[in-house]
Image 1 (cartoon, rainbow, N blue to C red):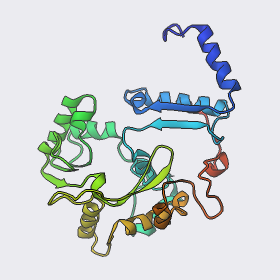
Image 2 (image 1 turned 60 degrees about the vertical axis):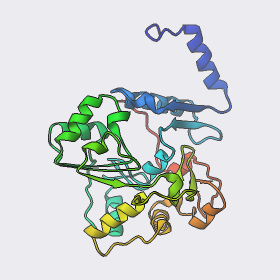
Image 3 (image 1 turned 90 degrees about the vertical axis):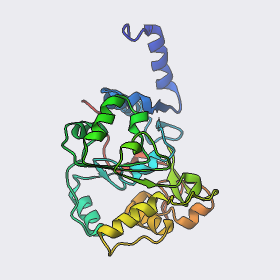
Image 4 (image 1 turned 30 degrees about the vertical axis):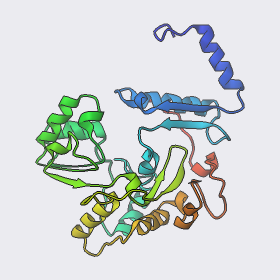
Length: 284
């Protein structure tokens, strides 16, 4: 407490407030995870939430304030080095088999590189190619000079973005994409609320929706695979992600809906029963 310049009386007051409150929301910004101790900080918050019984309770829980509006949706869709869609671990053999069958491909059963590991590996020329989608790390991340040098080291760099960014200026190929106001699709915000996107502006000539660019690349790699529109992409989502199964495209037309949403429970309340696995304290 002395190192943090917090008076013992203040700490005791906070502890009593946490212990006696009927509901507690733990809110933290993404900046909290920006340094080497980021994981430990989040683990400390999670431990405190478990210790005080605030997980899976009404008007309580942990709420990370992500930098981007669809960060939660991205994680739900498997944009993580350690998880498939639906937060299924890549080391889960049953999950691995299920997604291998869905996509007719042999999938890895070990985690990929984290962001920091990716930059470090590129800097050391251990990665031959990078695909940046909607990211400009030279401008948005710490150690910008190191990141710039890392991007220069890869043999082939693809940047998919709305604008020609600093990172895009180093790219071998630039794929112009539309903005969220120029395309149809869905997003899921930090309160797990899935919402439908509707285009309200005309896209510039040559720019295409992100899903269409990726779908066309996939068709080049596997001619037997085809996504015809944003709804067909979403149809796969509700097929493979259990807690999205009740969130049909038609249902989202009526407004945003929180997951989990199933035929038996449309409350959108994430309880300990929903998690279906024991809670464990982080000890790293």
